[in-house]
Image (cartoon, rainbow, N blue to C red; front, side):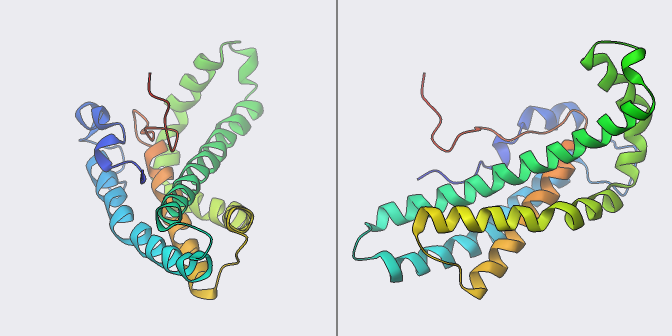
Length: 203
């Protein structure tokens, strides 16, 4: 079964294009972000996966094949990763949209690409320099929503409920996913996840 993308799949070409210098020395380089991503796979992902598989085997062994349990767990963690990335991207976009609205950027140019380029040129330094503060705002505002949405998705797919230990592991995994997504989106060029589907269609 397919697991979350390897670090090498996370826009490896960006490593060659932007893996060195950053404006703010405290901000992680591309290489350091990829290291964090690999740590996610090796630790939070692995811990949650093992816990979920153990729980589902205990509760579903009579009705679900072990390979199906394995696939279900991998897909659920994949979906949480993608949900985290999309949620953080929406937050990042909202920051630029609010700045643009205040500055009446649409009166400067009608091109969305040019609007983002101008705002990015002026404000990216500030956002990158204060990435920890801005991520704390995201955590306070959106993190519980993502955890609750993931919990509901799990309950719907498995007809089972999280135990306390699983809930803690899931919360840690989602927070790490969101943190890495935030660092990926603040890189220049931005890093993205590939493939974007759990079972990408082969052409």
